[in-house]
Image (cartoon, rainbow, N blue to C red; front, side, top):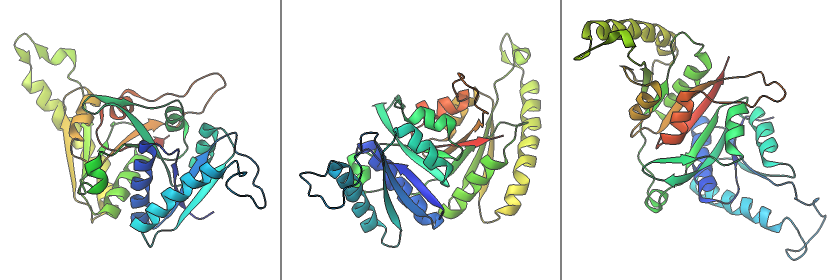
Length: 291
């Protein structure tokens, strides 16, 4: 199967924003864009049917309208539509296993506070075999005038596997031709606290040690992607809060999650940094599974 970027489409403003983001990313990566609409009650395809008797008319119209818009915005991009008569979650997970990434929309609660994921998106993000990207709905101004390209931020947990995470982040920055910021957040331990605040000698030592570890982790990727302008940041704060703050104004925030070997009856879950990014980040968030 030809490499694709798949986006889940349900006609909501969030899914349309996700489709526009996915089209831009697919074009930059020179991949095909697949628009997937899944619904268990889709009828078998009739040989010839008018809109009055075709039970899938509105599903087809949804995909066709989105495809026409995206094709007009990206004339050189190959866009294919896909209607799947299956549970949306299962269809998206299957599509994710066949794609370079899966892109989903995120519904807003309050623009300045957070947003939540629906019943479909969260399990897909937690179980997808490939990177899953979450995109919030655009404001009317954004739809007419897309925001300028910003940098890519990647959240790193030191002493943990990070090759898949860094490869995705560096490649994304490279194809977008934007800088990359690698961020490591680390809470100040209790022993570094003193009655008048914190022991700066202890925190300076923590920062130096973490800086050395971060530099070593980034070195092979700087060599692999010499065209990417890379900066790094050690932040002595709650890791989730540190990452969300670092991603202000970013084009994409990349976080990792453990690729769980799912056991029967055990629900997949995301770590605290991924949760913070998903619920409090203001830019698209890519969740990358890793061993």
